[in-house]
Amino acid sequence: MQWAHRPRPHRTSRREPQPDRTGWARLHVYAFIPSIENLSRNNGILEPVLLGVRNASTFTGFCSFHDDAIFAPVEKAPFTATPEQCFLLGYRGMARERYTKQSSARMSPLRRFADRGKRIDRQVEIQMLNELFEYGLAVGLNDTLAQMDEYSARLKSGDYSDVRAYVIETVGPPPIMCSAGWLPSSDFEGTELQDIAQSKRLAAMSVTSMWGGEKGLWRSSG
Image 1: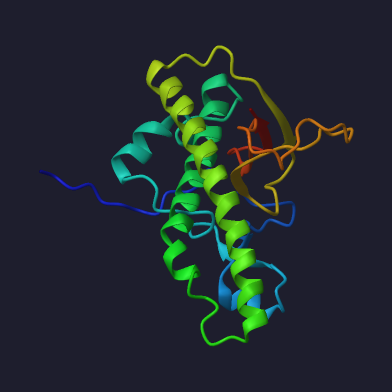
Image 2: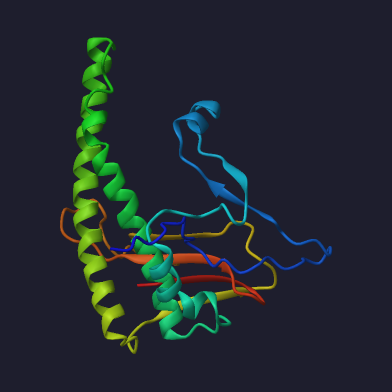
């Protein structure tokens, strides 16, 4: 059996940054790192930090072989917002959502002991918050797994004819690059689309901001 090297695949495009209007290439981007250390340092506020472009927005979700094979149309060709390219960006974002939710679920046993040594009232508060978090995590993970099954089926079929995306082009690289799945509660006009507090399966979308080789891109699709 041969084992493939497991790198840290990027959630966004790995294209080299281009010089901006000052002539300097943007070698760093902002990223949100929700670690206990960062939250403690900033009094519970999640602040963006600068990271090198090769280290930002990565996760160990794909082996090198599959990462290269699956995302070649995005990484090795100019981005022209084809249905396939838009689908792959969404697939990457949703894959990362599954990865993070499954990782959080594996930490559940540890969270149950987070109240050790606290006052009784504090223990009750922590356990109530943890119970609500675990409920939301379980529902969200079930939705994400179902969505990934649909994404995987479409990837295997190669049929992207009904993929739709909203793409905004920018002159330079976006200052914040990201890729993630999310549950929209309202549209751009503020009209409610769905009640995200409901326990039924919710409609999900993915969003990506990236450097496309010649222009910056913001893409959202369902």
